[in-house]
Image 1 (cartoon, rainbow, N blue to C red):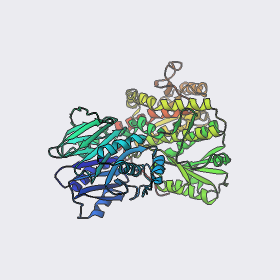
Image 2 (cartoon, rainbow, N blue to C red):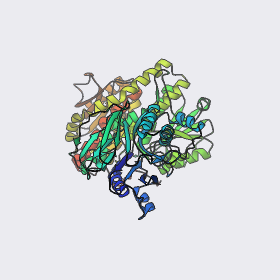
Image 3 (cartoon, protein in one colour):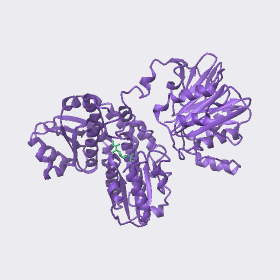
Image 4 (cartoon, rainbow, N blue to C red):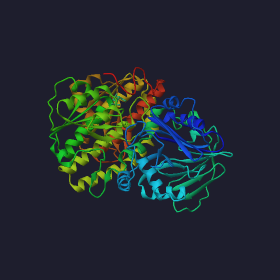
Length: 608
Ligand code: F6R
């Protein structure tokens, strides 16, 4: 995730900023940069890749100056290259900005500024903001920043310096964390207290809609109407080791718990309430082109392949376009029948998975149209495809994929909604889905709050040697995902099956030692799954069932019940998968395995 650090004081800013940015490395990023002001000139240095690359580029010649700012970027608009890295400047180089978040209306503002003669170097929303501040500057940096923020929509944490006002940092926040770290004869602005903890533990947290004007000796906090606010100084009482994982023991747990936010980020700015539809800015196909596709192929590996299976069910139900799912590793080596009426969609968190990339290249070579559903902006897959949908779920560091999976389902829902509205989904049906999607982040938070229940189940079954996961309909792929999560981090053998397939073989495995996890929300196949639970109980299996809140029908039958809130059928996977992620996590912790880096696994599989 992006990180902001800004310094004003009496010491040399560049080494301080670089050291502070390093404290934010754990958040994941793909480029870094800094700007330092001296004698009315601001020097900007940036580099793609890790901070090491920036340091190597700078060598011993760090730019001199006692005011500056720096940034680590996790790409959202434009590839993670040097040009798109922050800081960004206005056309004159006198205004310099770092920014976390997304300015949603940047394209419109960019166009307006272009008409006035502004020329842009990067593809970023941040550069547009820098130009707007420059355009509005007339003697007050604070006034120009506030004026620009009034015109921008979206989420931001920004820090701005200007050679017109040496020693001053103007910072503002809406939706993206920012704080002033108060020192003696020097002050900082940062997005994460981890960066500046070694300099001072006294911090003032900015709230949404607040602006800070910071100089070496003082800071002033106002609202956007310039009304001065009295804010209390808080003392940071935690240590770096704790915050690297946000206080969580493992990145995987942090990422599981982050899902209300990561899902909101995937949804941000994309739901059209009135029309009951979805706006997908990166999907460059025209409606006519979308309607011309006679068939869709979803291709992926591992967890992303499970998300694809859910996507297949959704696209066929909501948009009635024939859809199939292919393991990328198989697809690339067989002779699939493809033409320009086929849309091949690659789904990948990392955007670097070798088989998925090769499958997309093969599809293109065979004349198909291609798009991606990818998390990492500017990754190889993102660059290979014609267009796509970014997940915006932030860096996923734990090897076992969790928050990317739920964001993939959300992105596929948005795509299905978009396609459905072009084909046979009514406005009312569309609106119903939009409203249900809006409720999802809160419902996810609710389910994650019920972790205690899962903990006791993990304790009971931590020494099991086998697990079976069963689901039907939209939750059959969730059964596969639950089994994969368990086996990859706890090393317990686990299988996922469509529940009715059990009778065709796996039922032979069931005895009183076999835990069987059922997805049984109240959906179109609920009565069917209830019968499958009976079949397992009749053979002595021990049943853990995920059911909808308020459902007591199965109480006498199941050994352990976990409840989830009610939602529309296609969205149940988003809730059902959460207890399965937590179950796998808690069993792994109890067994003492390396949760974040399980044996033999890599986060990004760039070999076939
Ligand atoms: C499982 C997991 C893997 C990945 C797979 C594809 O937890 O993380 O199965 O899902 O390697 O990776 P991406 O999505 O990066 O293409």
